[in-house]
Amino acid sequence: MNFAIISGYVVPIDGDPIDGGTVLVQDGKITAVGRDVPVPDGIPVVDAAGGWVLPGFVEAHGHLGVHEEAEGWAGQDTNEMTDPNGARLRALDAINPADLAFADALSGGVTTAVIKPGSGNPIGGQTVAIKCWGRSVDEMLIKEPVSVKSALGENPKRVYGDQKKLPSTRQGVAAVIRDAFMKAQDYRARREAADAEDKPFDRDGTLEILARVLDGELPWCQHTHRADDIATALRLADEFGYRVVINHGTEGHLLADTLAARNVPVIIGPLFTSRSKVELRERSLRNPGILARAGVELAITTDHPVVPIHFLVHQATLAVKEGMDPAAALRSITLNPARIMGIDDRVGALRPGLDGDVVIWSGDPLDVMSRALRVFVSGREVYTYANGEPVVADPYYREIK
View: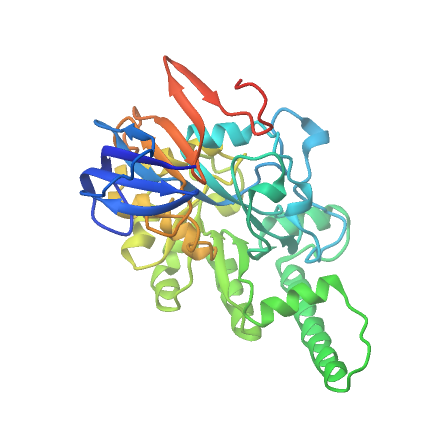
């Protein structure tokens, strides 16, 4: 839990790079970052000469643990597609830390992931931020809930249209969301009246969480691809006064000035996909750069397992190839997603006070030939690549496998 990384090319993300820098971690927290950091006696030293040292990457929108790999039906818990309003549902309750994707995440330098329900429902449920290593989701937990997931566009209208029930159109999807918030407004008023009169009140898990969105406690993560659906997302947010985060935002570049002016963040991606449905016609690796240059706070996502989690950095690399600034690309997978999801007090940069989530790379991580060599989560080394073999520490503290 205590160590110092010395002599590397340190990229703090929220400060200038430090050639030959030191990162000191004590009791699982970063305590110092700089060029001339004194290392206390007895602290183990890791020599990163020739390598790059960065914070662990942050995946802002994934389904690790709820959409398990190589498990088929048994490991598929992403969507509860039996109720259009799943606000009471929690991704936390469905995450399996044994999902193979968590080891993949570490191999790609990803140490934090925000896990979200899927996009089959107009209101999918509550999201959770976790570390990518641990025995149980409770031990991996950073923050819960982080936001509430909602979906516009093709997915919910297809799911419920196939069932011949509301919502089967874009009108219907928006109506479900609007009706839910109107009920939450009424619920909140009744609850306040009961509190004022010191009377008992029957709680409702669905409306309680929506009231927290109305109160500004939780952002509304809005799955939306097309520009017209993004406009609907903004319209609904204006109507009810909640804080919206655009997720996917495939056509966000068409409204980049609007999003920037309104300070609406975008979590863009996945970017390594075919145009498998109509609303993806505008998908392009140029789009992240367009949004970033317009001043939009931007994060890049794999939407794992749509794109494998360890390819997060490669999406950033190809966005740079298509015009995105390299520093902006690194922020889009570190500090920006942490800020957008409200966990930048724990992760996203190399800064004193943040968790000791540090990755030593063989070179610039935006070079596709670079690889993560050593990965630390909360000060514990959990992944090593040596002699051509990846080694993941067993979270159950059995033998290393």
